Image 1 (spheres, one colour):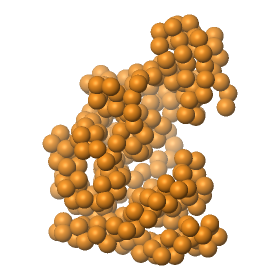
Image 2 (cartoon, helix red, strand yellow):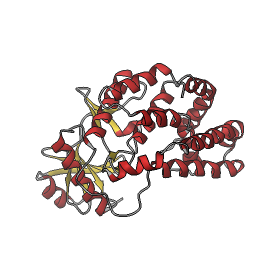
Image 3 (cartoon, one colour):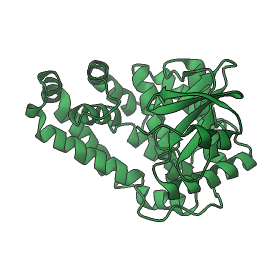
Image 4 (cartoon, rainbow, N blue to C red):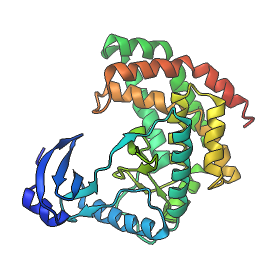
Length: 314
C-alpha cells in the first residue's frame, strides 16, 4: 500500500507533517494542526462527482459529513476525530442515525450534479445479483469448510426460497420504474450502511462516512438495508422496527407504495445472504467466527421474524 508523500500532504493540508502511519487500510497523517485520514482515490471521475455532491449537500444544510481536502487526483483527506462506531443495538444511536439518514435523503433529492457516466447498479439489480450469488453458494456448499456447509445444509434452502418468494412478490409492484424515477430525479443513496460507516463523537453527534458506493438510486434501499441490520442486532424485535419507522418518518414520510415495497423487502434475507457470500468467497472484512455466529443468530430467529412480518397485514 503506497504511502502518501510528506511534501504533497503538507501542501494539501497547509501544515507541517510529523508522521504518516497505516490506519485501517488507509493512512493517518499527524500534523501540527491535528490528525487527518488519507484515503486513496480509486476512481478519479467518481471522486470528482462526489466532491460536487458533497458541496451541494453542505450548501443545502447537511453537515453530518466530515470535511474533505483533496488533490482531485490521488487522495481524499478528512479530519480525524475521536469517536466510536455507531451501535446498531443502542436505541439512542438508532434514533440519531435513522433521523440523520432521513435528512440525508431529503436534502439529497433533486441534486444538480449529473450522474456519473456509465451503467448503474441499482437496487433491483443488487437484490437480484445477491439472490443469484447465494444460489451459487448453495450449489457449492459442500466445498466450503464444514461449519459453513453445515449451516447452509440446515437452513440455506429455506432462506433461498424466502428470497425467491420475495422477488416474485416484488414483481407485482413497480419497483423498477420507481427506482428509475429516483435515478432520473438525482436522488442520492449511500448504499453501504454498515455500522462502521457511522461514527459518534464525544458530544454524541453522529457522522455518516465512506461514500465510495453512493449513487443516485432508490433511497428506500438504504432504509431497508439499515433496518435489516438494526433488526438483526436486536433479535428482530417489532418494537425496534416501530422505533426505526417512527424515527425516519418523523422527518421524511414514505409514500403508500414505498411502505408496501418496504414491508415486502423485509422478507428478503439480505443479511443471511451477505454473510454467507462473504464467508464463501473469503471477502475482506468478514471474520469467520463472528460471521458464523451472526448466521446462526439470523437462522434461529427466521421463523419468529416471518411471523412478525405476517402480522404487518401486508
